Length: 285
Image (cartoon, rainbow, N blue to C red):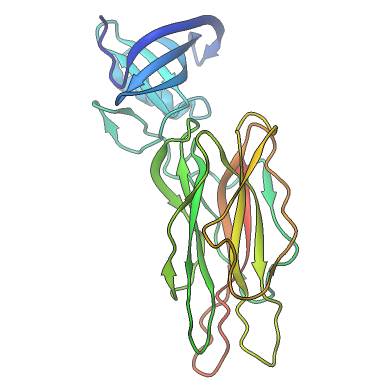
């Protein structure tokens, strides 16, 4: 049996020819793969014979079609896989995933927003999951009872592979320092965050204001929009304000992959802090 770097093949489903990658003629293999005793389906683009370093370099060059490589030592055959976790280090035991650590800002196909975001603060830099990863869940940092409550301070999305396996990376954009982390809220298996709704307290100059208080999401399959699932961390709402309308949803064959938050800087003693006021999410194919 041939030795595979990242997986052992359990059974072929079918094969068919595809176009070229660079100067190499390719074909696609649809497989059932056992990896760490977990069965998953993958779509491998078989490129041809080359060295392992050439195979890894090709993965970087054609990163839109590659997240990790499968390299067969006995035949020197290179296979590109876009369904696994995209790490930055080359690891002969778990495979090669040497793509860039962050997705380019232009790599999204839709921006999700809501109309009830808070007024205060400035937009921080956007932050994305690694290329090839998508949001499979989230957690929040919330300030509890305090003389100047700011409620929601951070939204952090949890990133995973196209197979919805957690990959270890997260994204959060701008954040404030107050409060404690909630637990994680995770989508059902093989679904991803695709739309959101934000709970915001309207500004009132006569009392302590808090800006955004809570966020909730809907999860959906990557490839279709037949079903979606509401997702929120219990109890599902904050202390102040109300939820607004739901955002648009990511198009089919895409999911949330990054975010950009509107954060008010610390106002100092005697002034009202509202921390996170608004957020936008990015969808990626």
